[in-house]
Image (cartoon, rainbow, N blue to C red):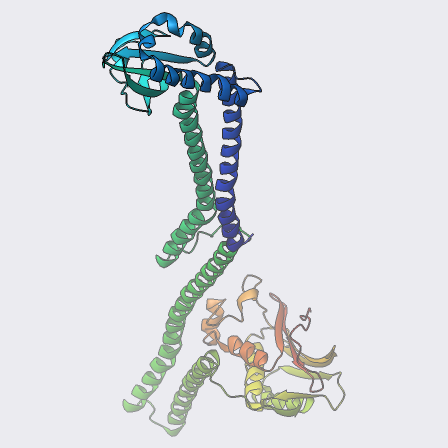
Length: 493
């Protein structure tokens, strides 16, 4: 679920929850109020004909007292006069109090003297009286006795149930509503914090680790939302940075190896050249034959250095993708035959047997850059020639069809490659057998150059070797009729 949907749901809950709680609060308030009404109905002995009784009995008390005030107010000084009102007053939980010059002369119910001081009288005055004994709603009326003494009567209604409802029940319900609202909002806030804030803190900690260079710890945050997408993006960035750092460390190691190897490979011929030049200068080469021999050796060493530097420059350009390829339609059989003829000139003085086995038609063509592809094949052939160690040295080049590609196999019966070195022979600057490489020369980038050139032609190169028996290189090139396919199956030898 996305964060956007979660936020919408949380906002809806924040709106619906208070409304629901308010409805619940009103529902509870209604039922409590109804229950309180029943309690008050029982307390005040209210029957179904309450309205009629209210208009007759309660109004009767009030109108009767008002009438007596006008006709004979001195009756209020006679307690026996109120005997007829006692039953109605008791039925309504009401109390009648009469005063004479602020002195109590009659009370239908016992009332504390200190409560009387809180009663104020005026014509049709109303008010509340709250004491330790209870709470009353009262109505007062003042008048004059026949001797012009101030008099007053008070009708007090006991409102204890109503006061209890207002003072206890309502605050309790309001407090319960607020508490439930706060708890609900706290739960929602906690849930949102757990699902959004805490994961963001984890991602921030992971980003800080990446910033500090700590790339080994994976970002383990699996979610199906925007934070999950951000986590996946950070994890991919971490993996790419880690890969980049590892490659950089590997490149740095390779660079150091290259410097070390090149220094060694350059130092050896330079030392040799210096020695022969010193021999010439010192007059050791005192005849023409020796002089020619010394000069030939110097030339050979200088040529080796030139080839080594040329190889390094080519690899550097290939590595930076700054080499331009000029592809043209090429008859692969003719191309390979011309390369073998060049090789024959180098090996005809030796006992090396070079064979070509052609299983192609005479019209097998590829798109190739003659110079670059020739360089790749020369590196392979030269590499094979270096390590031919058998008495009967043999090299076989086979051309055959492989699906819609052309397969070129270069096989020899040389010393082979150790199994531990085999997976890495195409790596840049890799020199597996140090002793062997030192004896035969080479910078360790010849086969790396081959791999880059072959792949630039849309082909593949693989190798199979048995140490002590020989090595076979397998090269596939796209036939000129074949369109390049990204999902072309790998070659298995």
